Image (cartoon, rainbow, N blue to C red; front, side, top):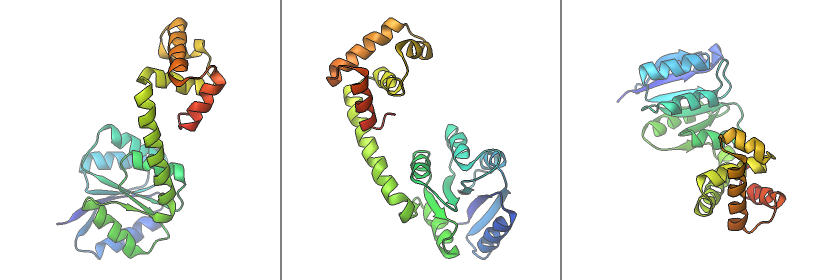
Length: 212
């Protein structure tokens, strides 16, 4: 079975190198090359490739924006994020948006080929140095999120996030298009449920659970 791949990177020399590398593999076919984010989104939607090899730093739309666009209309394409550097926040966002592989550009070419094949087969390929700690944080944050959902309603959680960002009741009411009195009722309910007595204590609680 041939694995159809779209390459997305704003450096033509790098694209040439990856395409030549893939041409040596009988099971890999490059069906499109893209040099910016908008072009990448169009190519994926029109061609529905098996794998998208996506650079994180792209013009017009960066790699994370491309992922968000594609997440609006999920398709069969599995995404491998390709980057020269990757911080923990990027890893977390990418995983949440469905990325199946993360590869650093410094890795050996054979590892890139292995990654594409494994991701196409339904497996994950996450570069250990960048992702191990980030995955631990993601799992811990998701566990805390479940704890929050068990205590607060969705609207209460939304209001807690806004309080934690320093918004006053009037501002919260305006953003949620509800009355200030309704906000006060929700805030009081949160105080009772969490056994806190003021906004400072509520902000500390929110920070400890990653709601800020």
